[in-house]
Amino acid sequence: MPLKIQGRLLERQLRCRVLQSPLAGVSDRIFRQLVRRWAPDALLFTEMVNATSLELGHGRLKMDGLQDETGPIGVQLFDHHPDAMADAARRAADAGAFLIDINMGCPVRKIARKGGGSGLIRDPDLACRIVETVVAAVGLPVTVKTRLGWCSDHNAVGVETAVNWCQRLEQAGARMLTLHGRTREQRFSGSADWNAIAAVKAALSIPVIANGDIISTDAARQALAQSGSDGVMIGRGAQGKPWLLAQVAHDLFGAPAPVIPQGAEFARMVADHYEAIMRFYGEVIGLRVARKHLGWYMDTCATPRDLRRAILTAPDPKTVHLLINDAMVAHPVMEAA
Image (cartoon, rainbow, N blue to C red; front, side):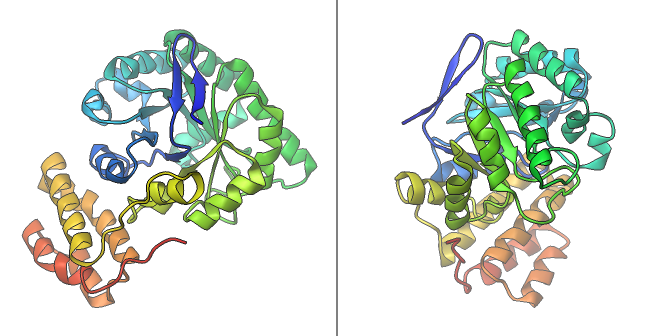
């Protein structure tokens, strides 16, 4: 059954309950197109967009061409200025966004200390004003991605704080909440607390999506069972495994089974992704962007250390292309159970 998300003027429906997380420096148009090969109905997201920078003319590349992409694409915004967020939301809606997501969970210090991302957890009044302002600016559904709180506190008081924080976001107009099961203080250490997400889910009337440590079908199954959430959002787990959303959607929700590339097909997929990055960014930036993707692909197929080093230190695209086949073909792709 589709998951309904009601905006001020428009309703959206999610046919797939496995979502791709916004990932800074990763979930660009090239990566989204690759994930889309296996997950045609999944909600994918842009990299998070700085609302103030967008107002100044920066960051538009992250939203360019949304109308030309297939399937639902959400635009995630971050900032601590309500008016700038509203203006950016209108621009995103005009660009073809499926919905508007507000980042209130990014733990990066340079963002949080300026009041954006997870910094908004410490100022719930401002956070709610941002939600209210963005909701009033667009007819699309407005959603929020956040964390359990600022400081680590796993007792009943901490869970109550998380529930109160999320209830305020719902009251401000958020129509879906994606909740990472950690606090800002934890960043990515320890384990995601899916039981705490369950307490939030029980207290809200809007859809809740579980996020954090969902790197396989087994992890997604446990997250759903423990949290009672309406779906899961996969982030880092899809790095090097762009078919993972489709695999989880098949295993847990009966979507078509993905054909996972092996051997020469896997190497060809990596080479195609590499070439697309070079075309999109140019060689100077592209070499840097592509290097991390190559590293994740080599994690997936357990490339030997010497070949890994050769690829990651290659001085130009031609050298990389000569090495991709040897680095990727002879080693079986490791599936996430």
